[in-house]
Each structure stands twice: as C-alpha cells, then as structure tokens.
Amino acid sequence: MSTPPIAADDAAARTAAVRARAIQVFESETAALSWLASPNGALGGAIPDSLAGSLEGTAAVLETLGRIEHGVFS
Image 1 (cartoon, rainbow, N blue to C red):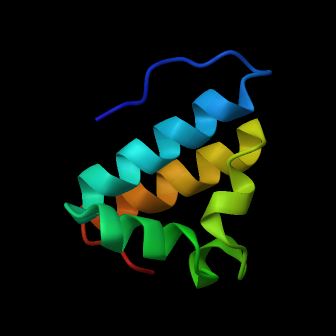
Image 2 (image 1 turned 120 degrees about the horizontal axis):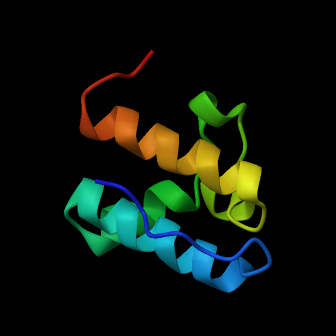
Image 3 (image 1 turned 90 degrees about the vertical axis):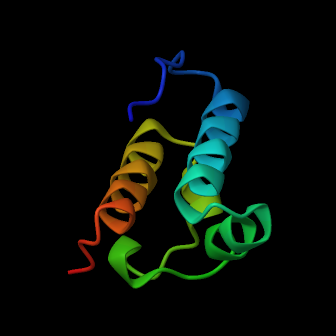
C-alpha cells in the first residue's frame, strides 16, 4: 500500500502518515506507537518517530514498515 503524496514542507502530515502506516502494519496502535518510539537497527539505531520530520527519514521509515509487513527483516 502506498502513502498519498505529501507536500515537502508538511512534517506534521508526514508524521501522521507514518503513524497511520505503522498502526496498519502492526494492527495495534499500542504496538505501533511502541515501535515508533524505540531505537531501530534497520534505521541505524534511530527512533522512527524522530525521522518523520524529513522526506528522507519518512521514506526510510515507510520502507522499513513495508519490509516488516512483508516479512523481510534483514
């Protein structure tokens, strides 16, 4: 599933889109918010929620969520 286009300067919309996608992937708001707030090895140890402010960070988090959804963990 793809995320709708978001204006480059709309960090709040990117954050909301990342959170919505995480909830969809984890099928639980609690699990999604926990994942978003925890350091992630696939993201170089970064906290996913902290990356949503930039276009590059948002893309990396959404890519990681896609990999999780499809069972690709390496």
